[in-house]
Amino acid sequence: MNTSTASALIAAALLLGAFVGWFARSIFAGPDRRQVPHAPARDHVVPHHDSPAADGGPDRRLVDALIGVHDLGDGVSAADRISEELHRVGVVRLDAQPGTLFDSSSQKAVHSVAAPTPDRVGTIAEAVRPGWAGPGGIIRYTEVSVYGPASAGA
Image 1 (tube, rainbow, N blue to C red):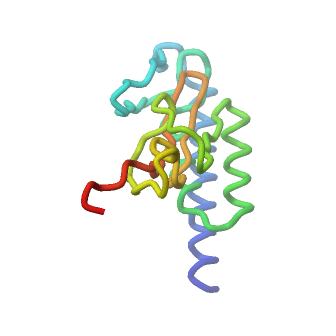
Image 2 (image 1 turned 180 degrees about the vertical axis):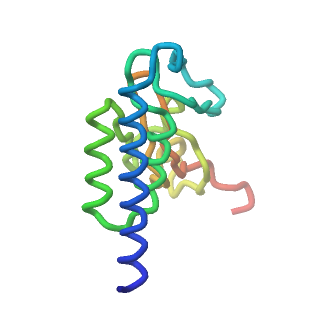
């Protein structure tokens, strides 16, 4: 068994264990063990929940874990399967298209690149990491590289 197969099997086992744990907790958890969801802060700090939302939504820890596994997975079928399961609980992937205007309501600029032409300033040069949104709002902002003005010395 090669390393990538072993890694994929370990990731699948962890994912299955997390899903079974979440499912068991959601069935047996009473209303006193649930927390009320809240909107994410505008400064991109997203708090973590320790239990499922009061409205019966997905467990935030499980969602964060699935998103992390999605980011690490290089197998298209695994990433597609995780995206489908997240979508079933109301969590959708947010993508950014190069050439479109940067939108701070759902995107986070993590890098700046000199624009090849002045009309490209403020547009997305490259999507770095997808964002995710759930019923309560943004879970993780889409990370993008944005075209900025060319430096004065160039």
